[in-house]
Each structure stands twice: as structure tokens, then as C-alpha cells.
Image (cartoon, rainbow, N blue to C red; front, side, top):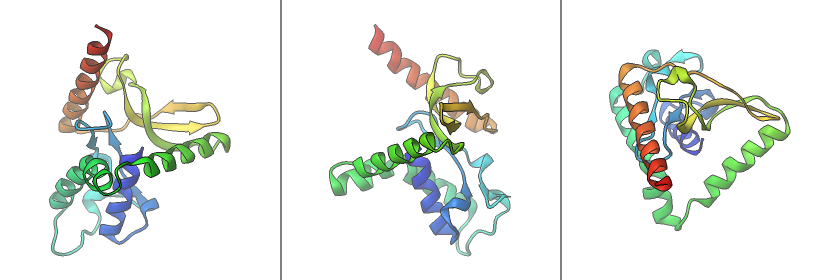
Length: 169
């Protein structure tokens, strides 16, 4: 949720639009194997692939730059400057609590057991888009992915499963 919020903010700045109009998700493990699901990215209802990109850059350059920035921002940029990332985390927690208390039905990528349609097993828990309301996760959404993104999701799930198995052995 935190990395998705950071990505939306930064991409909105780059495209000169409000972050609320940027619909893109960072999913998987929160860490080195997380990734941006570019194939399902929309800007104000327009697929990112069809959105006018600022002159002097390409969509591919933006995708590469922001995939790296998203993965490294928390640790490299924020932690090194401040010594921690607690403000971002506390902001996300407050947003989740407000969403639950107000039964807002907002969509956030949160840790959840993967729906079988994700093809990574039903025991793995990783960041996936879910509708959050008064009961917490009310429904998990199936995010469309291309073949590369599916492979990245499988690799992220494998990494999480390996960590889980290591802790339990």
C-alpha cells in the first residue's frame, strides 16, 4: 500500500496530474521482489499506454525509472535521510483505520492470501488489491497481468514461501 501510494504520487507529478487519477498497483512481497503492474495502469480511465507522455521521454523510460524508484525509495531515499520510514507507515495505518471505521470500500493493495486465479497457491500471503470496508478485507480483486508480470508474481510468491518455510523449519 505504501509503495503504491509513493508510485502514484511520483507518477502524477511526472505526468502533471493529480495522484488520485493515477491507477496503478505495486504488488507482491514488500521488498526486492515487489513489482509494478504496468499492464493494468490507467490514468483517469485512460490506459497508461495511450496517455500522452511528456515530450523528451518515453513510456518505457518512465516504467524503468519508476519501477526502480518504487523498490528503492523507502530504504535508499527516505531511510538514509531520516533514519526511518515511520511517517509513511503511520500514514498508511491511519488511512486503513479510517477506511475500516468509515466503511469506505476503498481499494488498497494489502497482504492477503492469494486467490487461486493468481496461480501462486492459496497459502502464500502477499500484497494484492483488495476492497477494504468495515470488516477489513471484504473482497480480493483479480488484477489482470501480462506474462512477464505473472512470472514476477510467481517469483515473489516463491520468495515469500521460502522465507516462511525457513522460519518454520
